Length: 293
Image 1 (cartoon, helix red, strand yellow):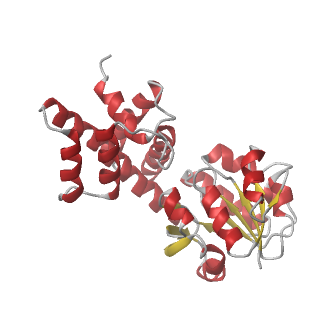
Image 2: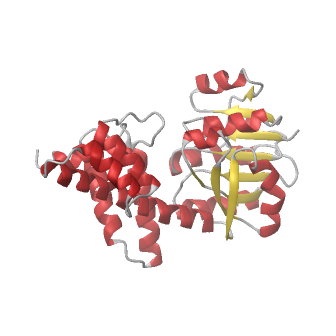
């Protein structure tokens, strides 16, 4: 049994924490709104009042939150996890999709606090998290990652090690920027199909089996065809915009071209500005449909 602090119980964090609890670990939960933590505690976890309290005695502190601000709030300050009395050689594992600059800063702060930092954003949907089938994108020292693999195994089917801290996030931001471009292009294509009088259900089926198919294309084409923009089981548009902007910030820092990414960011910004930010990212089609409204 390993003592683990888990911070953040959103759509992805909740099933990830449940997998750790189910594997027999001693898990202390922290969530900004305590109701989610209390509900999961019924399965055998403990609820902490602060991240610092959750980190007390922990061999690993795992965070899965929405953005840089949320990550800073759980790691830093008088109630932050970095101020807790974690076990010797404990891991600080950040699974959230964050800006590259903040990840590098956090890695430095964690090391200064005596923790071994694992940059570990994930890819997958909530149902994959619940099944323990996430892909983990790691940036860490080789020995540290080898020691952490057993901790990560309950929710990850595979780990790709990209290099030192920050490299996992660099890949995640790149691939999420690609995803943003794909989703925006699907919305544009579906509107063209609609204007041409094609049945959108049939178009979605054809896209799903054609050369343009990818998980992003398939999932979002089907949602757009059915008008299903419920964020449950999906990814809200405001989070897609956040990931897109973080990806563009990294591209600018690297001096890399991101013309298509800039266009996708404009589309998702329009969707959020029209009040669709809490809907599934697929609702970007409505932002384009009413672009001139």
